Image (cartoon, helix red, strand yellow):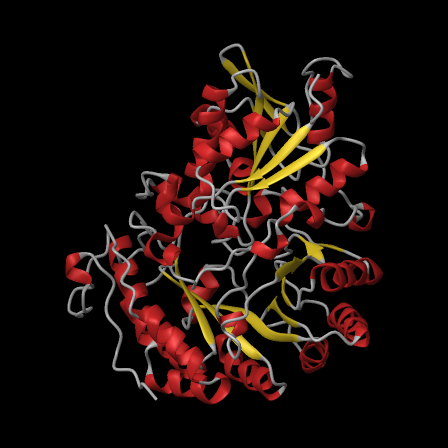
Amino acid sequence: MSALDIILVKPGSQRQVYGELSSFDLTAIEPPLWPALLAGFLRAKGYSVAVLDAEAENLSPEQTAKAVSDAGPLLAAVVVSGTNPSASTMNMPGAGAIVSRLRELAPQLKSLLMGLHPSALPGRTMTEEDCDFVCQGEGFITLPALLDALRGKARALAPIDGLWRRQGKAVVSGPRPATLPDLDRLPMPAWDLFPMKAYRAHNWHCFGDIEHRQPYGLLYTSLGCPYRCNFCCINSLFGKPGIRLRGVDNVLHEIDYLVERHGIRHIKIIDEMFAVNERRVTTLCDAIAARGYDLNMWAYARVNTVTDRMLESMKRCGINWVAYGFESGSERVLKNASKGYDPGSVDAVVAKTYAHGLNICANFIFGLPTEDYDSMEQTLESMLRINAQWANIYCAMAYPGSKLYEEALEKNLPLPETWLGYSQYAYETLPLPTGHLSGGQVLAFRDYAFHAYHANPRYLDMIRRAFGMDAVRHIMRMTEKRLPRLHAEPVEGYALSGSRDGSSPGPQAMPTD
């Protein structure tokens, strides 16, 4: 019998997923929440647990499989979940390569895939990948039952909630398990098993001190999201919309650990929606502030839920950045996406966020279903008007588990030929077409908008005044990068510099001092 019950693996596909950006320090290296949660949970139940973060360790699929084979666990669980909804599907090629190579090296070793993408498409994952099992859902119920079966302590592979497996030539599954109702019953994530010194914050998170983005940590204060945006797949992991909260004392204990044990100052609050309930947010933030730590944190908020009291408490406890999902400047596009806020309220929310001394990470999406050229122009105009300290600019993708994916299948819309095509930055990226634009036209406009925004002299001057010339130079280096794009095509009647040869357009003139 193996001395090691389970090894939890985060796959690494940095070069494939981020293309030319992978060799540049734009990208973050984020601690993997779900492997850490599951490791802490299983360890507390008495199972022997190891972890392997192939991304942080910069391991190829072959090197990862060799390390797993050498460890010799009963079960290798590859966890295909990132820190946002888009970070699962695009990592499937790396995850699949690990289990395929593992099959060659150690055919007796059982492998399992889990996370957002496998939960959204468990049957297809079993069919496409060379794994023994797929776990649908969080894994807190499924993994202990499976380990007991593999240990011989339970009837061999009877139906297990959340477990998909092969039975002869057929694929069979147990019922989907319920989520754990009380998060305070979960042990703290097993951060002691991870290479905490290897993790690095996003570049924008550390504007003002761009050379010191480590150490870096994650903190979750809730799981799930109560909203139903049609482009989001997050609830494929949980089965339905909803939110579960950790207790304040529970969260404080983990912050103490991250700060005192690992010296972490830069923290991402990973909650899908942190700033929802004013009483909850202010109580928690006031308690964090009372600790007196010098933290640099960021968190997600909604335009239609954030309040002055929230923002005041958030800033006081060390939340210096708020990430808003503005998505579009078009009311029509927002309504169709079930986003549920009035775009006329944006300017007031932006003003009060700045008034409380917080920076904004603005999230926008081009190519939602009713998008046309005029609405993309509206969004670009909104971006430039807001002039946030950072803008994440995406294309709409039909991620498995989202309503957009279901609609794309129903309408037989073109989807990426490989899972890597769901990466926003990969050469193969293929956004959804809209009712008026091809996916290639959306992609070309997105790349144009990214450079137009981050090379805008007004934006760069604001960055210089707020954070200094080091941040400006970093952004200028970033905008010098050209992402080669297989599918980019110009919008008719609108010249996008550089798009005709399949590369993203170049930046506008930029100040150098």
